[in-house]
Amino acid sequence: MLMIISLFFLYVLPADAVEKDNRKWQDESVYLIMIDRFNNGDQSNDEDVEINNPNSYHGGDFQGVIDQLDYIKDMGFTAVSLTPVFDNTAGGYHGYWVNDFHKTDEHFGSIDLFKKLVKEAHKRDMKVILEFEVNHVGPNHAWLKDGEKKDWFKSDQDQQKELPLLNQDNEEVKNYIIDAAKWWIEETNVDGYQLQLTEDSSADFLNRFIKEVKAVKEDFYLLGEAKDADEEQLVSFMENGGDGITDYRLASELREVFSQPNQSFSPLFARYAQNETMYPEADLIGTFMDNQFTERFTSNTVEKNEHPGPRWKQALTFLYTTPGIPFVYYGSEIALNGGDEPDNRKQMNFRTDLEIVDYIKQIGSLRSDLPSLTRGTLDVLYEKDGMTVYKRDYNEETTVIAVNNTTKTQTVTLTAEELAADKELRGMLNNDLVKSDDNQYRITIDRDESEIYLLRDKSGINYSYFVALGAVLVAFFIFLGLVIKRSRKQSI
Image (cartoon, rainbow, N blue to C red; front, side, top):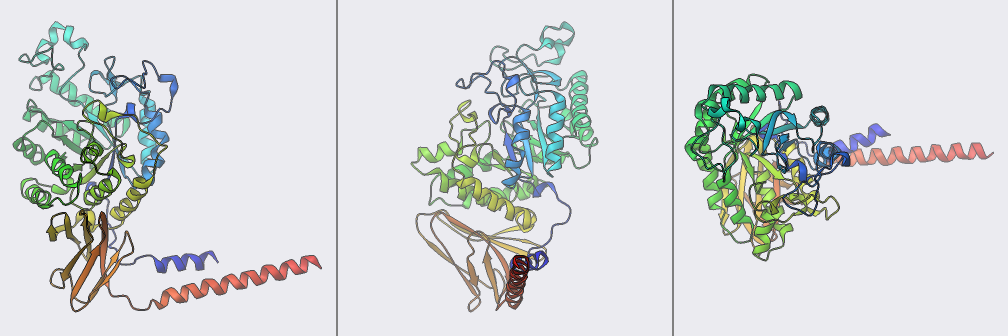
């Protein structure tokens, strides 16, 4: 009976998707977590916690992340990215005031618990990226009082206004930071680092860091956090072995386009085209709507009197179906609001509306199942005032994505020259079906809706489907008859 039912479901699942070979970094989707603000799993380490103080600890810790790994995986995320976990100067809830590069912060838990976090993530086939601080230490670091380490810091900075800036051209500093980075990989088995790139970052240091760190573990991912870096520096980072950068310019355009309807997609596609020509591996760039350094995208929508739910759905659809690795900041799935730092780092709430959560599950599943969405070429088929249709091709698979970010229902006609003759588009989000008619595909999308189509051969009557269904029904009635017969024997 179970075999027949399994056969039935096999027939109703799509058979056109191209199978993915070895999983690559561009296939990942990443959930970005600020540890202190995510989930409190162990109240025994709640020292200095002031839940209503935005500049104090809120109690999030490693155990809290471990407890929610299934929640994260269920949304379809294949990796988590964590803010720095190092021991911090008092008040460093965010992790950026490093006090000791070889210890975890006591508010988060022990290094053994962090190792468990990585193991638990790996058990779920999820990768772990750790933000590794290479530029600064905390304001009260012991090195500042060590006369022999005076040359470890940049001398031309205002110590009253900025965190102590490490002199990355100093050989001792290079050795220390690189050795610490290698130690964390060997000790905890993390899968990648995110590095802050600033205008003060030393190219020589970064090149050596990249070479030595990537040699420790195969397929180790290095992402350059690019908020304060220029384009030339970002290109250099990737050309010298760094895998990707966080694209703040794209994020700015994304926020502008999706925070309200009827905005042209042209700046977005122009940025993707620029990335393709500028960077060695554009598919490895980290794409995002917001993060711990920007105001929340939700706040952009609210400022324009827009409901954040539809805006987030449209934005995430685009983010998940265009080149790059999507990084989704914790709380986006509940449209968490917040302005500039620290208001953008509010406490996560797990007891709220699941509308966006369920949608992320849908598009996350499709992104994992359809390699054209993560590895395919990008061709824009239509774009006008908030309505766009584009396709992605990979091997024998073609997906067509339609995003209607306007205030009206939109209809777009595509030709066989743009797709293929005598086929059909099967909608994977809303079960829309568009068949070629006179070598044309007429796509109609409601306002604030999107669809991800799979191009496939035209379907006639699915005889296999009905045969399988009939077999299930026959088997059920036979089974029912046997049960009734047995019960009658037992009653005699």
